[in-house]
Length: 400
Ligand SMILES: Cc1cc2nc3c(=O)[nH]c(=O)nc-3n(C[C@H](O)[C@H](O)[C@H](O)COP(=O)(O)OP(=O)(O)OC[C@H]3O[C@@H](n4cnc5c(N)ncnc54)[C@H](O)[C@@H]3O)c2cc1C
Image (cartoon, rainbow, N blue to C red; front, side, top):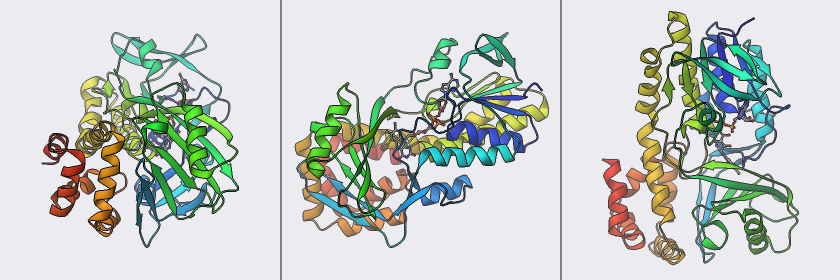
Protein backbone atom coordinates (compact mmCIF):
# COMPACT_ATOMS: atom_id res chain seq x y z
CA UNK A 1 0.00 0.00 0.00
CA UNK A 2 1.25 3.51 -0.79
CA UNK A 3 2.14 5.20 2.53
CA UNK A 4 0.40 8.50 3.12
CA UNK A 5 3.43 9.72 5.08
CA UNK A 6 7.09 8.88 4.46
CA UNK A 7 9.56 9.45 7.27
CA UNK A 8 13.32 9.51 6.62
CA UNK A 9 15.39 8.12 9.51
CA UNK A 10 14.62 5.79 12.39
CA UNK A 11 16.23 7.92 15.08
CA UNK A 12 14.07 9.20 17.96
CA UNK A 13 12.72 12.15 15.94
CA UNK A 14 11.65 10.02 12.98
CA UNK A 15 10.13 7.29 15.12
CA UNK A 16 8.20 9.72 17.34
CA UNK A 17 6.85 11.70 14.37
CA UNK A 18 5.82 8.47 12.64
CA UNK A 19 4.04 7.19 15.77
CA UNK A 20 1.93 10.35 15.98
CA UNK A 21 0.99 10.20 12.28
CA UNK A 22 0.08 6.52 12.38
CA UNK A 23 -1.89 6.97 15.60
CA UNK A 24 -3.74 9.74 13.76
CA UNK A 25 -4.95 7.11 11.30
CA UNK A 26 -2.58 7.52 8.32
CA UNK A 27 -0.41 4.85 6.72
CA UNK A 28 3.17 5.71 7.68
CA UNK A 29 6.47 4.22 6.55
CA UNK A 30 9.90 4.93 8.06
CA UNK A 31 12.95 4.49 5.83
CA UNK A 32 16.20 3.68 7.66
CA UNK A 33 19.51 3.19 5.92
CA UNK A 34 20.94 0.82 8.54
CA UNK A 35 19.85 -2.80 8.93
CA UNK A 36 19.27 -2.52 12.72
CA UNK A 37 17.43 0.32 14.45
CA UNK A 38 19.60 2.16 16.98
CA UNK A 39 22.88 1.00 15.50
CA UNK A 40 25.54 2.21 15.17
CA UNK A 41 25.04 3.82 18.59
CA UNK A 42 27.28 6.81 19.33
CA UNK A 43 25.19 8.58 21.99
CA UNK A 44 26.20 9.22 25.61
CA UNK A 45 22.63 8.37 26.57
CA UNK A 46 21.80 11.04 29.18
CA UNK A 47 18.08 11.87 29.09
CA UNK A 48 16.36 14.01 31.69
CA UNK A 49 13.68 12.43 33.88
CA UNK A 50 11.28 15.27 33.05
CA UNK A 51 12.11 15.07 29.34
CA UNK A 52 11.15 11.42 29.07
CA UNK A 53 7.95 12.22 30.89
CA UNK A 54 7.14 15.06 28.48
CA UNK A 55 7.75 12.74 25.54
CA UNK A 56 5.27 10.29 27.08
CA UNK A 57 7.88 7.50 27.15
CA UNK A 58 7.75 5.16 30.17
CA UNK A 59 11.09 4.92 31.98
CA UNK A 60 11.58 1.22 31.29
CA UNK A 61 14.39 -0.99 32.55
CA UNK A 62 14.55 -2.31 29.00
CA UNK A 63 16.78 0.67 28.20
CA UNK A 64 17.64 2.42 31.50
CA UNK A 65 21.10 1.56 32.78
CA UNK A 66 21.47 4.05 35.64
CA UNK A 67 19.92 7.09 37.33
CA UNK A 68 22.00 10.17 38.09
CA UNK A 69 21.35 12.84 40.72
CA UNK A 70 23.62 15.64 39.55
CA UNK A 71 27.10 16.34 38.34
CA UNK A 72 30.56 17.72 38.83
CA UNK A 73 31.78 20.51 36.58
CA UNK A 74 35.57 20.59 36.24
CA UNK A 75 37.62 23.63 35.25
CA UNK A 76 40.67 23.01 33.05
CA UNK A 77 42.90 23.12 36.15
CA UNK A 78 41.01 20.18 37.71
CA UNK A 79 39.07 22.17 40.34
CA UNK A 80 35.37 21.35 40.34
CA UNK A 81 31.98 22.32 41.70
CA UNK A 82 29.46 19.65 42.60
CA UNK A 83 25.71 19.86 42.27
CA UNK A 84 23.67 17.01 43.69
CA UNK A 85 19.90 16.75 43.99
CA UNK A 86 17.94 14.53 46.35
CA UNK A 87 16.01 12.94 43.50
CA UNK A 88 17.22 11.47 40.19
CA UNK A 89 17.57 14.16 37.54
CA UNK A 90 18.48 12.04 34.53
CA UNK A 91 18.51 8.50 33.21
CA UNK A 92 21.54 6.95 31.62
CA UNK A 93 20.12 4.91 28.78
CA UNK A 94 21.38 2.45 26.22
CA UNK A 95 20.43 4.49 23.14
CA UNK A 96 20.25 1.50 20.81
CA UNK A 97 17.77 -0.20 23.13
CA UNK A 98 15.93 3.10 23.67
CA UNK A 99 15.45 3.60 19.93
CA UNK A 100 14.24 0.01 19.54
CA UNK A 101 11.83 0.48 22.44
CA UNK A 102 10.37 3.53 20.64
CA UNK A 103 10.25 1.54 17.39
CA UNK A 104 8.32 -1.31 19.06
CA UNK A 105 5.73 1.19 20.27
CA UNK A 106 5.61 2.71 16.77
CA UNK A 107 5.01 -0.71 15.21
CA UNK A 108 2.22 -1.33 17.75
CA UNK A 109 0.71 1.94 16.47
CA UNK A 110 0.88 0.58 12.91
CA UNK A 111 4.10 2.18 11.60
CA UNK A 112 5.91 0.21 8.91
CA UNK A 113 9.73 0.20 8.97
CA UNK A 114 11.79 -0.33 5.86
CA UNK A 115 15.36 -1.14 6.97
CA UNK A 116 18.55 -1.09 4.89
CA UNK A 117 16.65 1.48 2.81
CA UNK A 118 18.74 4.54 2.13
CA UNK A 119 16.72 7.44 0.78
CA UNK A 120 18.81 8.99 -1.97
CA UNK A 121 16.55 11.84 -2.92
CA UNK A 122 13.41 13.78 -2.07
CA UNK A 123 10.97 13.84 -4.95
CA UNK A 124 9.54 17.25 -5.80
CA UNK A 125 6.71 17.92 -8.24
CA UNK A 126 5.89 21.55 -9.00
CA UNK A 127 7.68 22.65 -5.84
CA UNK A 128 5.90 20.20 -3.53
CA UNK A 129 7.59 17.18 -1.96
CA UNK A 130 5.62 14.13 -3.07
CA UNK A 131 7.78 11.24 -1.86
CA UNK A 132 11.30 9.86 -1.81
CA UNK A 133 13.56 7.79 -4.01
CA UNK A 134 15.23 4.66 -2.64
CA UNK A 135 17.77 2.77 -4.74
CA UNK A 136 16.54 4.70 -7.77
CA UNK A 137 12.91 3.59 -7.23
CA UNK A 138 10.19 6.17 -6.60
CA UNK A 139 8.16 5.88 -3.37
CA UNK A 140 5.27 8.33 -3.47
CA UNK A 141 3.57 9.80 -0.41
CA UNK A 142 1.42 12.83 0.44
CA UNK A 143 3.86 14.17 2.98
CA UNK A 144 7.49 13.60 3.96
CA UNK A 145 9.07 14.11 7.37
CA UNK A 146 12.85 14.38 7.09
CA UNK A 147 14.48 13.25 10.35
CA UNK A 148 17.81 12.22 8.83
CA UNK A 149 19.95 13.66 11.65
CA UNK A 150 22.62 16.37 11.74
CA UNK A 151 23.95 17.98 8.59
CA UNK A 152 21.04 17.48 6.19
CA UNK A 153 22.97 15.64 3.47
CA UNK A 154 19.80 14.29 1.87
CA UNK A 155 18.27 17.78 1.83
CA UNK A 156 21.39 19.18 0.28
CA UNK A 157 21.39 16.47 -2.42
CA UNK A 158 17.76 17.43 -3.09
CA UNK A 159 18.58 21.10 -3.55
CA UNK A 160 17.66 22.42 -0.07
CA UNK A 161 20.49 24.08 1.88
CA UNK A 162 19.77 24.54 5.58
CA UNK A 163 23.22 26.10 6.18
CA UNK A 164 23.29 24.35 9.55
CA UNK A 165 26.33 25.49 11.52
CA UNK A 166 28.18 24.33 14.63
CA UNK A 167 28.37 20.63 13.81
CA UNK A 168 31.15 18.91 15.71
CA UNK A 169 32.31 15.33 16.04
CA UNK A 170 31.52 13.54 19.29
CA UNK A 171 33.57 10.54 20.41
CA UNK A 172 32.40 7.98 22.93
CA UNK A 173 33.98 4.92 24.54
CA UNK A 174 33.10 2.58 27.37
CA UNK A 175 35.63 2.03 30.11
CA UNK A 176 35.48 -0.59 32.84
CA UNK A 177 37.44 -1.18 36.04
CA UNK A 178 37.41 2.48 37.17
CA UNK A 179 36.19 4.13 40.36
CA UNK A 180 33.47 6.79 40.08
CA UNK A 181 30.48 8.10 41.99
CA UNK A 182 27.63 6.28 40.19
CA UNK A 183 25.20 9.12 40.98
CA UNK A 184 27.10 11.94 39.28
CA UNK A 185 28.00 12.77 35.69
CA UNK A 186 31.25 14.65 35.13
CA UNK A 187 31.75 17.53 32.72
CA UNK A 188 35.35 18.60 32.01
CA UNK A 189 36.32 21.81 30.29
CA UNK A 190 39.77 22.40 28.79
CA UNK A 191 41.28 23.25 25.40
CA UNK A 192 43.81 20.43 25.77
CA UNK A 193 41.20 17.77 25.09
CA UNK A 194 37.88 19.44 24.22
CA UNK A 195 38.42 22.82 22.56
CA UNK A 196 35.05 24.47 21.84
CA UNK A 197 33.08 21.85 23.78
CA UNK A 198 33.73 19.59 26.78
CA UNK A 199 34.52 16.05 27.80
CA UNK A 200 32.13 13.88 29.81
CA UNK A 201 32.14 10.88 32.12
CA UNK A 202 28.76 9.15 32.44
CA UNK A 203 28.54 6.45 35.09
CA UNK A 204 26.78 3.24 34.10
CA UNK A 205 27.62 1.81 37.54
CA UNK A 206 30.35 2.47 40.11
CA UNK A 207 33.08 0.87 37.96
CA UNK A 208 31.93 1.35 34.35
CA UNK A 209 31.58 4.65 32.53
CA UNK A 210 30.78 6.05 29.13
CA UNK A 211 33.43 8.61 28.42
CA UNK A 212 33.62 11.02 25.51
CA UNK A 213 34.18 14.47 24.15
CA UNK A 214 33.22 16.80 21.34
CA UNK A 215 35.68 18.49 19.03
CA UNK A 216 35.77 20.41 15.77
CA UNK A 217 39.18 18.92 14.93
CA UNK A 218 40.22 15.67 13.27
CA UNK A 219 42.20 14.34 16.21
CA UNK A 220 39.26 13.46 18.51
CA UNK A 221 40.36 9.90 19.12
CA UNK A 222 43.81 11.00 20.32
CA UNK A 223 42.23 13.71 22.44
CA UNK A 224 39.91 11.15 24.01
CA UNK A 225 42.86 8.89 24.82
CA UNK A 226 44.59 11.90 26.38
CA UNK A 227 41.55 12.79 28.44
CA UNK A 228 41.04 9.22 29.68
CA UNK A 229 44.70 9.04 30.69
CA UNK A 230 44.36 12.27 32.64
CA UNK A 231 41.11 11.26 34.35
CA UNK A 232 41.72 7.55 34.99
CA UNK A 233 45.42 6.92 34.39
CA UNK A 234 45.93 3.78 32.31
CA UNK A 235 42.51 2.59 31.13
CA UNK A 236 41.41 0.60 28.11
CA UNK A 237 38.95 2.26 25.73
CA UNK A 238 36.32 -0.14 24.43
CA UNK A 239 34.00 0.29 21.47
CA UNK A 240 35.03 3.81 20.44
CA UNK A 241 32.37 5.42 18.24
CA UNK A 242 32.04 8.82 16.61
CA UNK A 243 28.97 10.77 15.52
CA UNK A 244 27.86 14.30 14.80
CA UNK A 245 26.89 16.73 17.57
CA UNK A 246 24.89 19.90 16.82
CA UNK A 247 26.07 22.94 18.74
CA UNK A 248 24.60 25.59 16.47
CA UNK A 249 21.28 27.46 16.35
CA UNK A 250 18.06 26.03 14.88
CA UNK A 251 17.79 26.19 11.08
CA UNK A 252 15.92 29.10 9.48
CA UNK A 253 13.26 26.96 7.84
CA UNK A 254 11.78 23.60 8.90
CA UNK A 255 8.58 23.47 6.79
CA UNK A 256 8.30 23.36 2.98
CA UNK A 257 5.45 22.36 0.74
CA UNK A 258 4.92 18.64 1.47
CA UNK A 259 7.98 18.46 3.71
CA UNK A 260 8.72 18.90 7.43
CA UNK A 261 12.12 18.71 9.13
CA UNK A 262 12.43 17.33 12.67
CA UNK A 263 15.21 16.64 15.16
CA UNK A 264 18.92 17.27 14.61
CA UNK A 265 18.43 18.09 10.91
CA UNK A 266 16.42 21.14 12.01
CA UNK A 267 18.90 22.09 14.75
CA UNK A 268 16.30 21.28 17.42
CA UNK A 269 19.09 20.60 19.90
CA UNK A 270 20.41 22.08 23.13
CA UNK A 271 23.56 23.81 21.88
CA UNK A 272 24.96 23.84 25.42
CA UNK A 273 25.25 20.03 25.52
CA UNK A 274 24.44 18.82 22.00
CA UNK A 275 21.57 16.81 23.50
CA UNK A 276 18.72 16.52 21.02
CA UNK A 277 16.72 13.46 21.96
CA UNK A 278 14.18 15.23 24.15
CA UNK A 279 13.73 18.61 22.46
CA UNK A 280 14.06 17.10 18.97
CA UNK A 281 11.54 14.43 19.96
CA UNK A 282 9.07 17.01 21.24
CA UNK A 283 9.35 18.98 18.01
CA UNK A 284 8.99 15.76 15.99
CA UNK A 285 5.73 15.02 17.78
CA UNK A 286 4.52 18.50 16.76
CA UNK A 287 5.60 17.72 13.17
CA UNK A 288 3.54 14.51 13.41
CA UNK A 289 0.48 16.44 14.63
CA UNK A 290 0.84 18.94 11.78
CA UNK A 291 1.12 16.07 9.30
CA UNK A 292 -2.07 14.50 10.69
CA UNK A 293 -3.87 17.80 10.30
CA UNK A 294 -2.60 18.24 6.72
CA UNK A 295 -3.40 14.66 5.68
CA UNK A 296 -6.87 14.99 7.22
CA UNK A 297 -7.56 18.13 5.19
CA UNK A 298 -5.99 16.73 2.01
CA UNK A 299 -3.72 19.78 1.82
CA UNK A 300 0.00 19.53 2.55
CA UNK A 301 1.03 22.80 0.92
CA UNK A 302 3.37 25.18 2.72
CA UNK A 303 0.55 27.38 4.03
CA UNK A 304 -0.90 24.45 5.97
CA UNK A 305 2.46 23.09 7.17
CA UNK A 306 3.71 26.49 8.32
CA UNK A 307 1.65 25.91 11.47
CA UNK A 308 4.45 23.54 12.50
CA UNK A 309 6.96 26.40 12.32
CA UNK A 310 4.76 28.61 14.46
CA UNK A 311 4.23 25.91 17.08
CA UNK A 312 7.75 24.60 17.59
CA UNK A 313 9.34 28.01 17.30
CA UNK A 314 6.77 29.49 19.71
CA UNK A 315 7.52 26.81 22.29
CA UNK A 316 11.25 26.23 21.92
CA UNK A 317 13.08 28.67 19.65
CA UNK A 318 13.87 31.25 22.32
CA UNK A 319 15.15 28.51 24.63
CA UNK A 320 17.32 27.05 21.88
CA UNK A 321 18.72 30.46 20.93
CA UNK A 322 19.54 31.29 24.56
CA UNK A 323 21.37 27.98 24.93
CA UNK A 324 23.20 28.72 21.69
CA UNK A 325 24.34 32.10 23.04
CA UNK A 326 25.50 30.41 26.25
CA UNK A 327 27.48 27.91 24.12
CA UNK A 328 29.15 30.72 22.12
CA UNK A 329 29.99 32.46 25.36
CA UNK A 330 31.60 29.31 26.74
CA UNK A 331 33.50 28.75 23.48
CA UNK A 332 35.02 32.20 23.74
CA UNK A 333 36.31 31.65 27.26
CA UNK A 334 39.99 30.76 27.46
CA UNK A 335 41.03 28.11 29.99
CA UNK A 336 42.42 30.65 32.40
CA UNK A 337 39.04 32.48 32.57
CA UNK A 338 37.19 29.23 33.16
CA UNK A 339 39.59 28.44 35.99
CA UNK A 340 38.91 31.88 37.46
CA UNK A 341 35.15 31.50 37.08
CA UNK A 342 34.99 28.17 38.85
CA UNK A 343 37.37 29.36 41.56
CA UNK A 344 35.14 32.44 41.98
CA UNK A 345 32.00 30.33 42.34
CA UNK A 346 33.69 28.07 44.89
CA UNK A 347 35.28 30.95 46.74
CA UNK A 348 31.98 32.81 47.06
CA UNK A 349 30.35 29.63 48.40
CA UNK A 350 27.83 29.61 45.58
CA UNK A 351 27.61 25.85 45.03
CA UNK A 352 24.44 25.70 47.12
CA UNK A 353 22.84 28.55 45.14
CA UNK A 354 23.72 26.82 41.87
CA UNK A 355 22.43 23.47 43.16
CA UNK A 356 19.17 25.12 44.13
CA UNK A 357 18.84 26.77 40.70
CA UNK A 358 19.49 23.52 38.90
CA UNK A 359 17.16 21.48 41.09
CA UNK A 360 14.32 23.94 40.39
CA UNK A 361 15.22 24.35 36.72
CA UNK A 362 14.52 22.27 33.64
CA UNK A 363 17.47 20.28 32.25
CA UNK A 364 16.08 20.59 28.73
CA UNK A 365 14.92 24.19 28.77
CA UNK A 366 17.95 25.79 30.36
CA UNK A 367 17.09 29.42 29.62
CA UNK A 368 15.08 29.53 32.86
CA UNK A 369 18.15 28.50 34.87
CA UNK A 370 20.33 31.02 33.02
CA UNK A 371 17.70 33.75 33.56
CA UNK A 372 17.47 33.08 37.30
CA UNK A 373 21.25 32.98 37.58
CA UNK A 374 21.43 36.40 35.93
CA UNK A 375 19.02 37.76 38.58
CA UNK A 376 21.10 36.62 41.55
CA UNK A 377 23.40 39.55 42.47
CA UNK A 378 26.13 37.39 44.04
CA UNK A 379 26.17 35.03 41.09
CA UNK A 380 26.04 37.91 38.63
CA UNK A 381 29.07 39.52 40.28
CA UNK A 382 31.15 36.34 39.95
CA UNK A 383 29.92 35.78 36.38
CA UNK A 384 30.81 39.36 35.45
CA UNK A 385 34.32 38.95 36.76
CA UNK A 386 34.77 35.56 35.11
CA UNK A 387 33.00 36.07 31.80
CA UNK A 388 33.32 39.77 31.11
CA UNK A 389 30.72 42.52 30.73
CA UNK A 390 30.27 42.36 26.94
CA UNK A 391 29.73 38.60 26.77
CA UNK A 392 27.41 38.52 29.74
CA UNK A 393 25.47 41.51 28.39
CA UNK A 394 24.82 39.60 25.17
CA UNK A 395 23.38 36.69 27.12
CA UNK A 396 21.27 38.82 29.44
CA UNK A 397 19.81 40.77 26.48
CA UNK A 398 18.36 37.50 25.16
CA UNK A 399 16.65 36.76 28.44
CA UNK A 400 14.47 39.86 28.53
C1 LIG B 1 28.86 11.40 20.98
C2 LIG B 1 27.43 11.87 21.11
C3 LIG B 1 26.84 11.90 22.36
C4 LIG B 1 25.51 12.34 22.49
N1 LIG B 1 24.95 12.31 23.73
C5 LIG B 1 23.65 12.71 23.87
C6 LIG B 1 23.01 12.62 25.14
O1 LIG B 1 23.61 12.19 26.13
N2 LIG B 1 21.71 13.04 25.23
C7 LIG B 1 21.03 13.52 24.14
O2 LIG B 1 19.85 13.90 24.28
N3 LIG B 1 21.62 13.61 22.94
C8 LIG B 1 22.90 13.20 22.78
N4 LIG B 1 23.49 13.26 21.54
C9 LIG B 1 22.72 13.84 20.43
C10 LIG B 1 21.70 12.85 19.93
O3 LIG B 1 22.34 11.67 19.51
C11 LIG B 1 20.90 13.48 18.80
O4 LIG B 1 20.40 14.73 19.21
C12 LIG B 1 19.72 12.59 18.40
O5 LIG B 1 20.15 11.32 18.04
C13 LIG B 1 18.96 13.24 17.26
O6 LIG B 1 17.90 12.40 16.87
P1 LIG B 1 17.39 12.41 15.36
O7 LIG B 1 16.32 11.39 15.31
O8 LIG B 1 17.14 13.80 14.93
O9 LIG B 1 18.65 11.93 14.48
P2 LIG B 1 19.47 10.59 14.54
O10 LIG B 1 19.38 9.95 15.87
O11 LIG B 1 20.82 10.93 14.02
O12 LIG B 1 18.72 9.64 13.52
C14 LIG B 1 18.77 9.85 12.14
C15 LIG B 1 18.54 8.50 11.46
O13 LIG B 1 18.38 8.72 10.07
C16 LIG B 1 19.08 7.73 9.35
N5 LIG B 1 19.38 8.29 8.03
C17 LIG B 1 20.16 9.35 7.73
N6 LIG B 1 20.12 9.61 6.40
C18 LIG B 1 19.30 8.67 5.86
C19 LIG B 1 18.85 8.42 4.54
N7 LIG B 1 19.27 9.17 3.50
N8 LIG B 1 18.01 7.38 4.33
C20 LIG B 1 17.58 6.61 5.36
N9 LIG B 1 17.96 6.81 6.65
C21 LIG B 1 18.82 7.84 6.89
C22 LIG B 1 20.32 7.49 10.21
O14 LIG B 1 20.89 6.22 9.94
C23 LIG B 1 19.73 7.56 11.62
O15 LIG B 1 19.27 6.31 12.06
C24 LIG B 1 24.80 12.80 21.37
C25 LIG B 1 25.40 12.78 20.09
C26 LIG B 1 26.69 12.30 19.97
C27 LIG B 1 27.34 12.25 18.61
